[in-house]
Image (cartoon, rainbow over all chains, first blue to last red; front, side, top):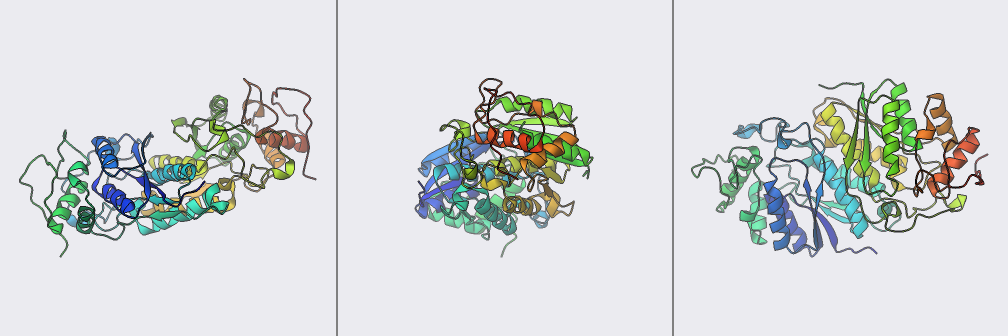
Length: 238
Length: 238
């Protein structure tokens, strides 16, 4: 019934989760990718998720529609902050925080994993070059893994122990991009921007700023199409 | 922004969650009831949830549609077990277990609570007269509360501490029914059966067996309409 090689991978269509999928595949997991339509402004990322899931030959890509409206700039309640100072990134919780989003995503991933007989969950949480979301920190990852192991029939019956993999947790964005590039991730297919204008990224939201800085610091050409081509990149590391 | 008097209450439409709502109201919380359409056989319980929410004057009753198909008799994958021996109830995990259901429900409740500025969640989990679900045990309740307090901006920013109330956790079904009756719960409006036949309860599934036994032991007339009226009730307590 259980299969040690199956993993459920949260796939937003962004740079981080695409890299995580490539890492899970490199670890020889059969991957089941899970994406969510939750009312996000950047629904274009779901098209990116489909392309990435296909490119990395997942066994199945499931899209769940859920309702997480309210309380976030990402679901349309307020403007997306732009061009915040580098020092602000990660030091407070910005308007783009979606209440309990990763808790909800991981809960659904856990439910699917139990049905599949999988004991490995992957999430692209990152606590270095990140927006300061509480549900991207090591304490959150540890608490969810602990929950999974008391919440489920699979764990309680002795069938196995759930592992929540967050392989990007302590990597800089540049390190993530380097690792993904080694593994063949096509970053042109990924989407990070919180406030896209058609197919182009805004260049100024936290996600764009972190992404641009990451490519610059990694010394890898950024394939992203931004609204203007003459963006300045302020680096904060090294 | 925050309001100590708001609570999110999971409301299935069953006997336990109706009692929990009455308890939360008796504790003077403004209640926000949350129900889920998750592909359950017993969708009739959602109509019950509406009646109960109204009777207990919730501030808002939200119904979320989510996909939890697969891996459970409750979502149509296999037959609902009937007339299991009393000794089997609670001693193993039955086919009606829905993988990670309470984790998913509470994750959504947490998301809504954070939007509302509520720090109190209520769930009707019970670990005495129950079906043996892992996500109804004290260890699960404690693990989810710990998660909530690292997962959310509200908790991390020092806005407050989440409390997950499970006031039925250590009560027998008879005690639950006595408590609810004192608080004016109209149990005729509640629905427990896993395999209803029209408006009537089957009488033989775990939920019906526990319910029938609870009323018998409480010495309170069971208002439930069962498919047959001459059911024997086997009591296991006292």
